[in-house]
Image 1 (cartoon, rainbow, N blue to C red):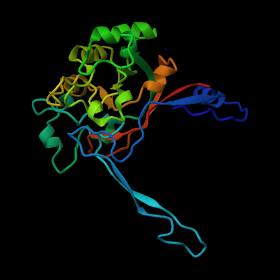
Image 2 (image 1 turned 60 degrees about the vertical axis):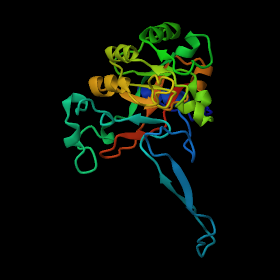
Image 3 (image 1 turned 90 degrees about the vertical axis):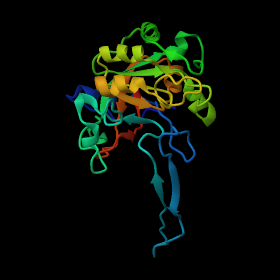
Image 4 (image 1 turned 60 degrees about the horizontal axis):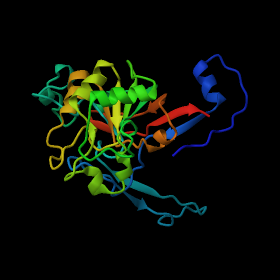
Length: 282
């Protein structure tokens, strides 16, 4: 999904970024909308939205009325970013923080979601499905460092320090089929540990993919182990973005672009919903 550029009056400015935006940008959505019943990892509470006040339930003297809703969701539902508090290994979070001590009191006193940065940086689309000449990678396929290097060569750009690397498997095409998308029986394609180590060595700030868990889920294994989360979140301090929809970006042939996302500043949380997008010249 893309948005049409907005016409703006001519103006002068000394700010190069503002000048570029004023000249005209087009936004390409990189995520899914949230809706009741959307696919969700079995490890997390799902998303629910319901109107609790409808138009006409209360009418003001001037004839005005309003509606509003109640939203209940986990922090790792739909398109979202993992905070560094999300995963520990041998009792330690990123930087050696004691996980048990940090979570005392019902929220994290260190590395919580309020510390996940908003990002306006270079994004690089690594289209692994296209490298293999398919629309969607096979269920359970392990995306390797060699796959990512080949995708970078195809794109003509390699991720670097501070970039966001987005890995396309094509799996977002299954989003409306929860059984296939979650892959409990057949598996889900995703990054292997050597792919994660390749990205960490390039010093990306974040990486994301178009699946529920980012990493390879083997047939029948479910989310029993998540070693890539350890490599990225715990060892390298690289944020993970999940449930992306990279189909629009791929269809438009995007390779390197301005990437933007803004997490909610959930104090002591382990993740946040986001609405990421690519900004390109109109």
